[in-house]
Amino acid sequence: MKQESKNSFSKDILNIENIQLEAERISGKLKNDILGVLKRKGAVIGISGGIDSSVTLALAVRALGAEKILGIMLPEKDSSLESKEFALKLADKFKIKTIDENITDALIGIGCYRRRDEAVSSVFPEYNPYDFKMKIGINQSGLNQFLPPVFSLTIIDKKGISKSKILPIREYLQIVAASNFKQRFRMSMLYYHSERMHYAMIGTPNKHEVEQGFFVKNGDGGADIMPIAHLYKSQVYQLAEYLGVPQEIIKRTPTSDTYSAEQSQEEFFFQMPYQEMDLMWYGLENKIPPDEVGKLLAKTTEEIDMIYNNLRRKQKTTEYLRMAPIKY
Amino acid sequence: MENTLQIQEKIKQFILKTSYISADQVNNHTLLFQEGIMDSMGFISIIDFIEDNFSITTTSNDLLESNFESINAIANFVSLKISVSENCFT
Image 1 (cartoon, one colour):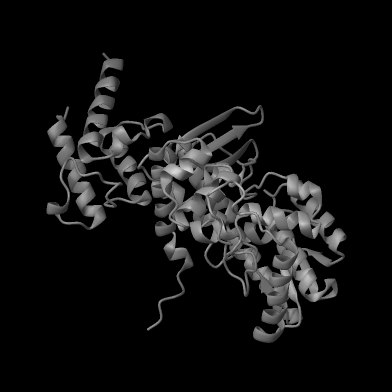
Image 2 (cartoon, each protein chain N blue to C red):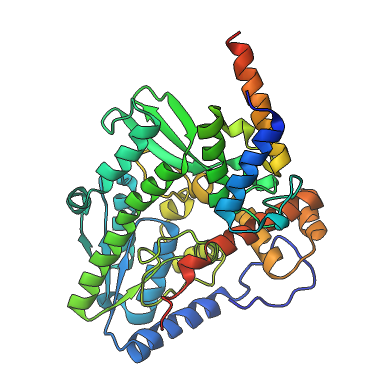
């Protein structure tokens, strides 16, 4: 989204000044793109009970009317029960039809859990999915250094005792590749419903997810249209309040909802609270000098330099995810 | 036990092999990550390489720039880990 010019870098620089106008602008464009450009008669959205899919759905309802929107819940055995509960509250609030597609059996059939657990067991031989929960996360220390992030694997037993180890490359890649079946299978199911209804499929990533590569290529990164891909996370929250997204969803901590152990998006990928991430990313994109960003966020110029460097690296190393197929 | 120079050489050969750069582009003091020689996959590969080849274990607390910023830093880190582990068994 184009930012209004402001004199100085401040905490409110990302506030959308005329929220009604922005909601109307996005929903107007969405209507035109779905009906006029994509030539589809409605839209399908995967709803997870998270803030991004909720705002996307609210905008789509505003664009086309509730009767032309279909919300699909796609839980699997590692999903939080809260996700479905919140998705239903959202559907109820915006009066849309929903379909519940549990994808666990499909994921079992394709070997998602088996392949993932095989890699986890090779790092922690005592691991089994019945007695332990697992998650992977990025090391927090990397942010303030000129070192790339490294992922650690954590297993948690039924007493809550956890163990963590740095993930070797082979196991890291296998866990990620196996887990990505979840997002790719969700994408397949969403397209099944969108094709059967002659609807468009609306993707729900925000600006950080797209630009820092926090999505699965041909998974949640696969859609016909992405109406909030230009919005910083704090702007997504601002729109959520304006559009009347249920407060439980607005107050919920954004999670990855991918691994059996609970995990916030901050812990898994972003390494800092979204309010800080928004300002950092804005500073980087708009070439705000590190000392100015540092003053606002109570960090040294060197710390901001390193964070800028890490964000640039994330953007560069995830270019592959955003690339269209190379065609000859 | 290998000395630090031998460790340096092994690490250098690994980096040359995996980063597709020529030998004249990197020396023992080159800042591998700051100068873009190695990326995040390269970093994990280095950790795997030193663990497999020098029988050491890296923990989250070891993930410091001072231990990994250059071939020299990595070799010193490996030497220190080896000597700590040997002292534990003597």
